[in-house]
Image 1 (cartoon, rainbow, N blue to C red):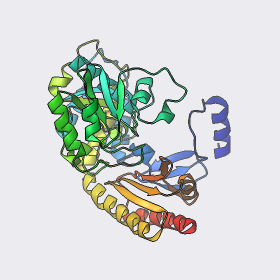
Image 2: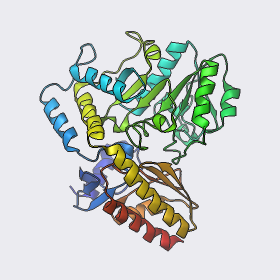
Image 3: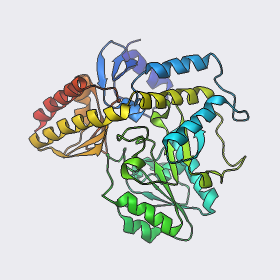
Image 4: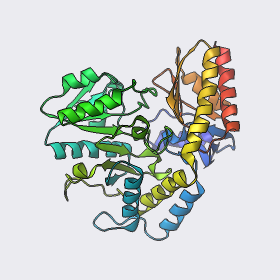
Length: 391
């Protein structure tokens, strides 16, 4: 089928919940994807920070193929070797000792809220304005952007919102019923918003003083995206709970709630579950993806190539007045403009580069870690030609 045929079938048979681009992808390898007509694109979005190790990484593909011939699903009424191996691996690379496995970032955040309430016996969660935590009813309530809530009221109770970066506002809103503070160390969907210096450190101290749990939503920042395995390491802050998903499975759906041992032990049999959570196929894919990150020294490349991309974007910011700011770390970068960026992303797509426009005016760059300097040069040349026309 060609793109038009696929789009027509989608319109007829698929619920129209996505504002899709007129692009039907067929194959991917490394930092490149190919559409059904055979056109090749440099992917600087990586499936929204999912394909960190690249499209169809050979080790991930091999692991999925081998495991699919052995055992795909069992339910969590039984033990499996891949699940406990992945739990141990996550304990080795993170600051946490315990894992609960699910299928997505929204599920991970739901699980984290349940765990915090179970551990503390309290109900209230403080979240941030401009945040994004998922699409379930509870998570659009936790999300600090009204556009995701509109039309889905009534929403669950128990959530407060304060300005991201305002430690005084957090302190003023903590009560005797506050269970946890939920925060993205870097706001992704909100426009690649980095925290003010010292904010996350102060947030940790405040939570300790007030006996409140600190939850980091690392669904987008986790597994090397910022140049460290987790953004918490970038800022030197240890949360009580971390939620992960996206890049964990190397492209295969899997999420997890990570917690320190004391907090994690609050969950007892029957408290929480996920039918497909931690299935052998997903866990095997995640093990392969994490091993690729570690064994192929990808975090070093994130810092080097990410730094090169940031430098190229900053050079363009000096030349074109519509560029207001370049921000971010590693390969999680945002270019804020003075104009809406949706048409820029569309023009870049026409020229063979996939980038994302978020928060209306922010071009978001989340390339696979296997992208090379030559591909970065192509991306920035395409972007420069567009900015030049608009300035």
